[in-house]
Length: 458
Image (cartoon, rainbow, N blue to C red; front, side, top):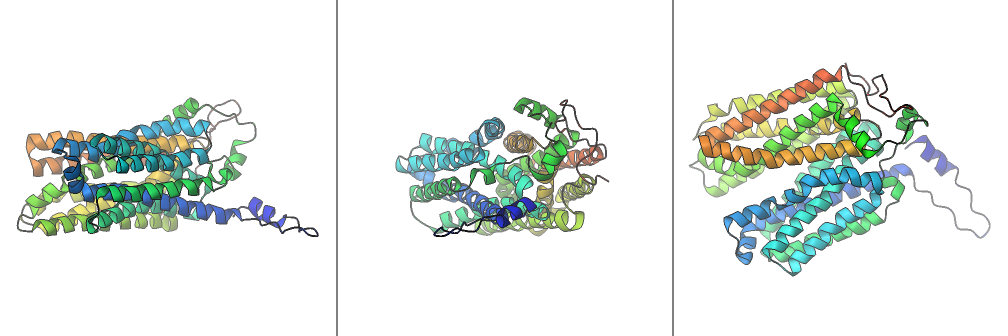
C-alpha cells in the first residue's frame, strides 16, 4: 500500500458524539479485490469459448449447420476481438474505465441471453462477435491496470494469472459442456448470468480504483508541467518506440502460432498416432494444451519476478524472452525426427513448443507496458491486443493454404518453423533495441525525455 493510502487511513477523524465511525478501506485491499474480480470475469467470459467448443455437435444439430457455418460460428469472436483493441484505445481516452468495464461485461450478457432465448445461426454468430467486441475492451484494460496498480513485486505474477484464468475458463467450459447433456441454450443462459453478475460487480467498485492513472512515481517523473497529449500523439509515440514495436511482433507471432496449432493439432495427431483410438488422441492433445501453457505462464512469471527482478529491467527480461524463443525453434526443428508412428516424441516436442511459447508471456506483456510512454499504457495494451488477435486470424488462414499445397505434416512443420523463427527474430531485435531505449514520455515542450527511465537495461 502506498504511503498516501496509509496516511489517508490514519488521518480518518474520530467519530463525534452520536456519530457512526468512519470506515476507511485500505487501497491495497480494494486493489486485490478488484484484481480478483478481473480474474473471475476472465474465467466467466472464457467459459463461453469452452462451452461452444464442447457443444458444437449439439449446436450444429439443433441449428442445422453445415461445416462452413460451423467454421463461421467458431471464428465469430474474432470478428469482434480484432477491432476491439483499436476501439478500446479510443474509448479509454474518452470514458472512465468503470463505464467501459460495465459495458464490456453487460454486452456479452445481453447478447448471450438473446441467442439462448431466440436461437438461430445468425443470433449465435452475432452473440459471439458482440461478446468478443465487448470483452476485448476489458482484456485491453486489465494488463494496463496491473502495470499501474499492482504491487511492484507481483506484477509479473498478476499478468500470468490473467492468462491462466483465461485458459482455466476455457477448460472449465469445455469440461462442463462435455459432461452435461443439457441443451446448449441452457449453458448459454449460464454464461449470460455469469457476465451479468460481472457487470453488476464492476459497477460496485470505486471509479478511481479502476482507472489507469498517472499517479505516484510516474507522476513525479512526468512532472506537473507535462502536457496532456492526444490519443493519436500517444499512439505515434508508442509505435515509434523500437522495443515496444519489436516486442509486440514477438508476442503476435506466438499468438498466431497457437491459433494455427489449435486448428490443426488434432488432424496431425491422427497422422502421428494412427494406432491410437480417437479418444486417446483427443485426451493427449487436451493434456498438452493444459500441461504446457499454464505451467509456462507461471514459471515465466516466477523467473521475471524472482530471478530478473521485474520486467522493467528490459535487457535481462528480453534476454529471457529470446532464450525461450530459441527453445521454441529447437522444438519445432526436431519435429521431423518424431515421424509418423512415433507419437510420444511428437507429443513431447509439441509440449515443449507450447511451453516455450507461453513461458515469456508475462514478460512480453510487461515489457510492452514498461517501455511505452507512461501516459499511454492503455494505448500500448490495445496495440498489443490488436496485433496478437490479428495474427491469430492471419496465421491459420495462410497456414491452411500452405497445408493444402504441400501436405498436412510438411505444411504443419513448415508453418510452425516459420512462425517460431519470426518469434525469435523479433525477440532478438527487441533485446538489441533495449540497450538504446528512450521512453517517449511527454515533456513540457512535448519532446521525448532523453534518458532511459525503465530501470536496468544491461
